[in-house]
Image 1 (cartoon, one colour):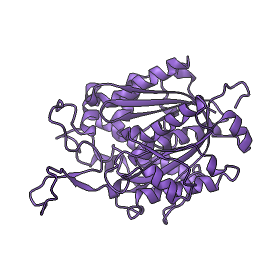
Image 2 (tube, helix red, strand yellow; image 1 turned 90 degrees about the vertical axis):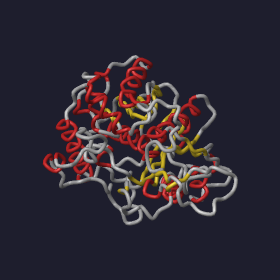
Image 3 (spheres, one colour; image 1 turned 90 degrees about the horizontal axis):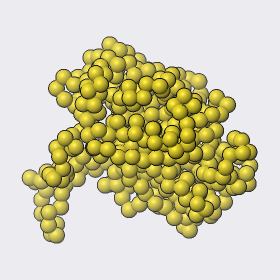
Image 4 (cartoon, helix red, strand yellow; image 1 turned 180 degrees about the vertical axis):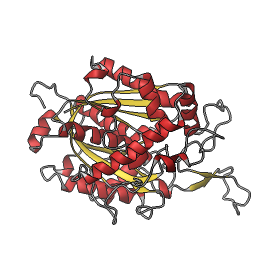
Length: 397
């Protein structure tokens, strides 16, 4: 990084678990234990850091209905053995939660509130509980006849005042936008195949070595399908509507995992004696109609690039969280100047997995690490977020 770079927020180091598949290798692990193990690894790998100097632990978590209740950031920090004086706060911005954690950490560093902070995300989707609406102060004698709701992903216990178009499944909303742009099922399947192929190749090249730490017997991301093909993807049924283009194969899976990153300012980065992973240059969160959420990254990208007076052609690496292939292709359709060969070069969430609270943290550190492998440059991270939100972040290495 250039000595001319203005003071700001720096990514020092990061680590994550491999992402386990739904009811897979990490399904027996509580979210607070997943997070604790990741926090402990991060601190152990930074011997120059006095954990007592951490100003906060900011963690994204999108569920909060089960074992991650009661502020999973604080619970994870205590379980990791961090000093009891280190606070913790849990953030829910759905698919952008882990990114929002880093945004808030960076903001506090820029204004001088923090000197050292850990940010990241966690989700144990395999363990998301079934829930039932409480309708009285008295504990019911039986739950027979009650309506049960899954809390793994998506809307539940919807307020009837909302427009029904807003509360469709995320997959259906993204599919409808893609249909408007005539994005085909074949194009979605091709993007998904690419994601699996690139994710597998990244592991073969040991790109994640030193960042992804084996945990509970799992050594690689568990949702990568090395044997998938266009024929197999084409054979999958529609998932979100009759005859629709969205399928389980061209959508991100349900996953378990955690990510943790250490951030500091320029002065303390030098004191740690570490080169750092990159600087958070600018961030942007936006909103649009809830059923148009797959377009929100386009709005966020345009706004964040305007903030830093950069063009799409100035960006060396793009990480766009693959909630759905239809969403990524929508972004590329609306921003045709983006070179697809610079996007998700080591695979995306369709293959790597999408533990909702952790994914936006994962794409940030993957972007920074890829910039490092290329000798530096500018990267943009973007993600769609349910209920019509989007986030984009510019990183410099």
